Amino acid sequence: MKINQERLINSFIRLVQIDSESGEEEVIVECLQNELNNLNFTCVVDKTGNLIASNGESPIIALAAHVDTVQPGKNIKPIITKDGTIKTDGSTILGADDKTGVASILEILKVLSENNKPIQLEVIFTVQEETGLVGSKNLDFKTLKSKKAINLDAEPGHIIIGEPANMQFDIEILGKSAHAMHPEKGINAIEIAANSIKKIKWGRIDEETTLNVGLINGGLARNIVPAKVLIEAEVRSRSLAKFKLHCQRLVKTFEEVAKSMGGEVKIKNHQEAWPFVLSAEDQLVQTIAAACKKNKIKPDIKLVGGNTDANVFNANGIKTITTGSCGIDYHTTQESVTEETLAKGTQIVLDALLSLSKEIK
Image (tube, rainbow, N blue to C red; front, side, top):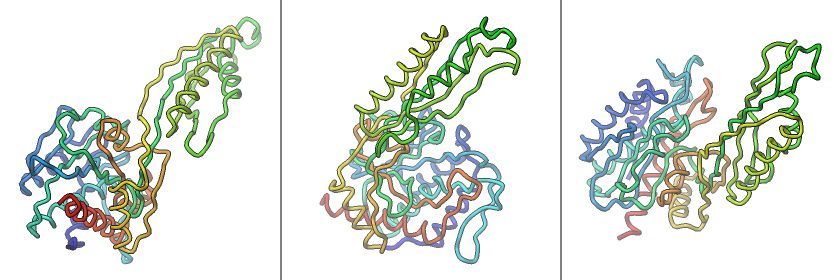
């Protein structure tokens, strides 16, 4: 059973021309709902804007992708070059992240329908994935019936089986202002920040743990001892024990340094994602790997440092693997995908679904 590559490409080109920056996905959700209704799927749009659809009471698996894009993602004008590369003129992103996944799912459903292959599925199109997995975090998982899912949000051949926990920190350091000619009358919040940062090891801690300080903002003028500094930082790890350890160390370090220098620190933290690591020998992983080999792509079973909707799905009891048909340089205006990449990634997921349906029988 083969996909229709021309139809797939045309669908992708149409989808990327529908503006859907994070928080502005209503139009594309409505378009997708119409398409799914035409394929005899029952659809529900939840209060967050996610689209959930099914074609039966006993789905063997869910197919998921997010419909939002990063900025600049309005008025996208896709270009197909002679060598089959799809890109833009460089003024916007392309939106292959993740409209390749959306286009792949639509094509798979159409092929199954045309070939009268009655596989019961759930389809989940999430919103605001790019701004903190907002859509998936607000799904009502009690209404979902699938126990497994394929999240189409990676390159063909990539089979992502592990993603980290992610804690985000907003750190406010308070000192005391004074004129720079009388620094002893003040408490320099920037100095507190610098000394705190110096005591922490940043960057890659080990193969599954990273720390980053990404934003520092403080001070009023060069001749004023700064009284306040705002810092944004994060901790990631696929190990829950290491994650908790480094989060605690970060908080303790800033608190101790601030106190020792006569300042004060206020820390707010928000857990963005929860960790998961699945077995490389899992049936779903091996089924996707076999589909990769069938399509002459070497499977690359990966543990990664980024977060996707798979973090949320796994945390809510749905075993989820991320693969897909994405291109390269996503989140930049140089983003591109080839027709071959999109077609092969779609075919791999279709072949995996067909294998899963036979295994269940």
